[in-house]
Image 1: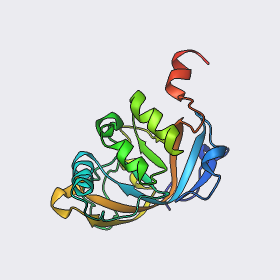
Image 2: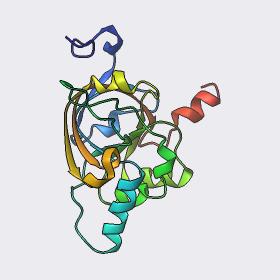
Image 3: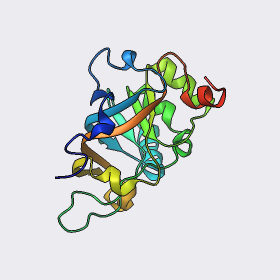
Image 4: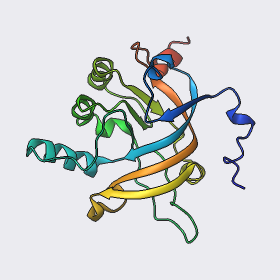
Length: 192
């Protein structure tokens, strides 16, 4: 049995959060909270974001409804035989900052990646009632053990940068930006 399927001691005390998010759940999260995410994630990196915004510019429908969803900034590697997915570690979030406010306007409620977000994205998250989670960079093989299913939804020609739907269980993350405007990275830097 996978280490993450049996809920090791690491997960004791983590807030369990289902995705898509039920009403009121995001309000209970604070910057610095460690969470265990389970449910459905959408994925997207640079190419997916460019294409989504191009569809919006053209007035064309998007391949998915972003309302209430979490978007994970990942480009998974191909699955080895017998596996659901290859390594699935986060990419640097600020690369998507130019596109994120538009997706938040469509009802996106959370993003997940690594690193800091720009002030403009942080403001857009507050306006939209969205949060930002980070997960461990450099641990893509370990994180892939939390993924139970992987389905390509759109942009197959983009390879790993396509839009995927992932079914996840016990995916570890930390709340970086909460609904109250707090930023965990800022608080750590200031010694709080």
